[in-house]
Length: 506
Image 1 (tube, rainbow, N blue to C red):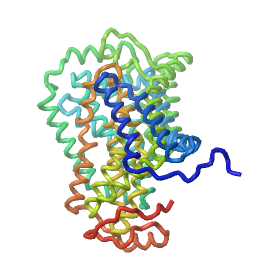
Image 2 (cartoon, rainbow, N blue to C red; image 1 turned 180 degrees about the horizontal axis):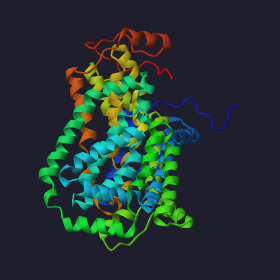
Image 3 (cartoon, rainbow, N blue to C red; image 1 turned 90 degrees about the vertical axis):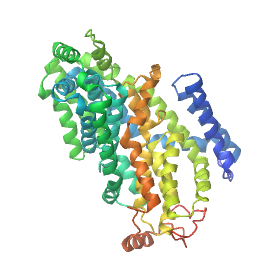
Image 4 (cartoon, one colour; image 1 turned 45 degrees about the horizontal axis):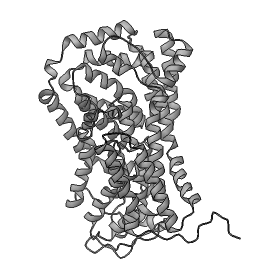
């Protein structure tokens, strides 16, 4: 006898039905954001989840199986939620310990306003490569850089754009990063070949962004007239309220060392919390109960200087709950779309229009971006297109390194540029952009995060010209045969690509 919750041959959705929950959700989201002016995308995404559930039931799915799809994607992304929790604790404790104030103090003294944006991008890149986590970089070094930028009277969105460019680009090429390992894993390549193949887009994009930030520092931003009185007031206030010492940078150095030694990110970040707590006790005289409060609810101080207070009154696990709740709802929505076959139906419809390698490469980048936009999950935006498009590349005898680069750039780099995406929500929360409180102008960090969107553009140019688009080597083709990986057969770069994909190998 069949189980009550057993599915009875659920149908594949038509393109129109698959698009229904996506389009309706974007409409509700647009009304919430642009008509009501309320930047809380939680409820529109929850409504989208409900609509997807109704579509799934119409297709013959039982709710239990839709629910399993929702919770599966959430479960896969729980390590990222754990990173959010650790970063929240680090922010509160590192401010209390004097680590963040010390970074701000020395940054204001040692850096000049003209080179600040370019230096901020490079610093975040180096730290992110070392840590293997863009989120950890944004929540620690990025927060300190926001304070330095405020001291130089640089607009918040310019500083945030430089921080995001560096942090997510470092994450993209770090062998310690989860997304950098996920992209080659789902496409059947190895991580170091994947990183090497991203250099033709990574290096030009970073050089372009670096040049723009330098030009902005010397022309667009009035750094030369930055108020020395304001800088002196900030540094004096930091000295008055914190012990400032170079050894207080040890908690940050510890996290970087642990990451370089390939310790997992969560234990490394938590070690940073403990080291910060010890530093707070020894250097600032904080008590145990105070530290527990800082880790949970964030740091609080009144210095009399609005810039310092707005920057340092933050952190703690609770400060991340807005982001965590948004991430969980967005992940649930993406999981429901995947389980009901809606995302797959949309991708397959796209595949029917593809006829050449340049079309496949362009579609892979755009599909990854679109999945990021709709599902709100950078992991799903890498994993789903990676699985779906890999047989096409094999059939065309093009290396799947082209695919891994496309989905890495459309997934990892675009994630922080979508406010309701997990990456974008974290950036807005960790950097204190105040978008939820009505500071919508701070969303200008999105176009100013040059490296993040220039890289996919360069990749699309390569796709159209054939530059840096390697064919599959004989060894790679032999590996495909030995591993029995699915191939869309009888294809060539000059021949039409059929819309129907070969079965997914796993």
